[in-house]
Image (cartoon, rainbow, N blue to C red):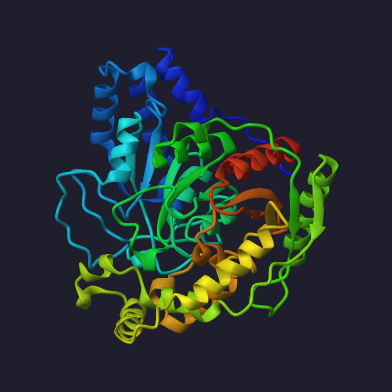
Length: 447
């Protein structure tokens, strides 16, 4: 295990601002300086709010409720998929309207009310369709190994946090868009269960879409989740009870081997958990044939966001995808039967187990390239292979998270996925925090 990098967490920074021991303007200016010095090589930010963020930090100093703000003064990166007043929503696309919006989304509104400083908007692949992030302006590189992608579609936010540019990143997830970059960049990423984070865009991606945190520690991820969900109790992590934990390295689609080092990471985590007193079994859910249901929802696309883009300016791979989307939606291929059957099988599994541990990823991540210039099929094949362990839980709507578990011989982080039945986010956070103590990880990539 690479030595742990010591840095102040978002939790510590917010406490220091609340107590008056840290100036939020200085904190914001420090983040802006790091971004200015390092982001040209990483490509995390589509827009850095240099002037606006400092003004927000100054205004924060005057808030009468400063001592009560959960994220007081914490510089936070927001994925470029949700409205920030005074900015446009890009969705990773040159085809998006450049019209500045006059109000925040509900998600950004919660961040501001909690005292976060919106430092900038991070890059995403066009319409968030892919697990690798590049746009016409930049390729988002992995801070640990720049030859590899930072993941997607929340790749910009993950890269910003993993590089230590900001302590917290907002992400969104419909088919692994948060856990995939978390695993690739060595972060904690939480995809909450359906309905935990209420949002006006929750009907996107056939109802699988949600928002969640990217952070370097479990406590920071829990803190941001508590703000997004408007549930302060989620930030209070308790010790886990003794759990029935299943581990599995079998790919849900039943084909192909995962990298040996990914399987070894799951075995290592299982050993630690068994030594901590949990009951461990090597058991695989009865996945069945949920693939067509998941594929139909991916092909159907994001829904409303796609309607607001200039078709002529879209990437070729996106136009191909949206043609398929029209067919899928017109013919009603997004059906509920296979989804309900999969949920029933998942509930059957979790009647006997409290948590499932799997690799987060099924293959090594793709290289950092201009994937946006490649064809639809060239993007699709590595995407489906990479995210085999992730998508099933979006379809089911169960909470899942990725935490760091070690490092690959290439230098890239390895993530393991923790899954629980609906409503068990506190259980996942408690178990993840225990693993953070048992198996501490480096919080950011070396410079």
